[in-house]
Length: 240
Image (cartoon, rainbow, N blue to C red):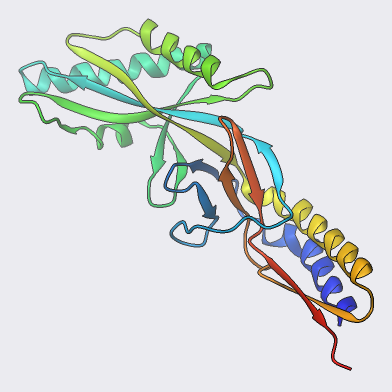
C-alpha cells in the first residue's frame, strides 16, 4: 500500500510538465493572501509541512491618475497625455505599466485603449480618474522601502499636463508562473513520505490526498511568498 502511494507521487511529478499552461503573473493581494491557483475564489488553507519559500518576482503599485479640468474633452486629453508620458518614461526607470484582471488576479498587458476604458468619474464634480498599476522587478538587494523610493521617484519626475494629479496606493506582490514550482514541491512531498514510512515502520500505512491540486501561495513577509500544494497526509496502523 505504502509503495503504491509513493509510486503515485512519482508519477505525478513526472507528469507535471505535461499539464503546465501559459505563463501567468499572479497578483498576491490581501484577498488572495492564501490562494489555490486556478481553483476559483481564494480560500483559507492550512499550510502543509512541505513548503517552498520564494522571493516575489515583481511588485505592483496602484497609481491613480486624476484631472479636474472643467471641460470634459480637455480633461480626458490631459489624462491621455499623462498616460503617454508614463509609458514613455517607464522603461528607463525600470518600471512597466500594467493592468490587472481582478476576477482572475493576473497581470494584463497595458494598452492605451484598455486604459481609456477604465476612465470614470470621481466623487468630485468635473473630475475624471482611472487606476492603473506600476510594475517593477524585485532584485536581490531590494527592500520594500527601495521599491517605494523607485516608484515614488518615477511618479514625481513624470510630467503632469494641465490639472493632472497622480497618487500611489496599495503595494502588492507578483508571482510569475506558479506552476513551475509544482514539480519540486511534489518531489519534496514524496521524499517526506518516504521518511515518514521509514520512521513509522512496516506496521503503519500512509495516505496522501490533494496532490492533484495546483500550486497555492501565501504572503509571509514584505517580499516573501510561501508556495505549497494543499495536500494532507495521515498514517494509521495497517490492518492485520
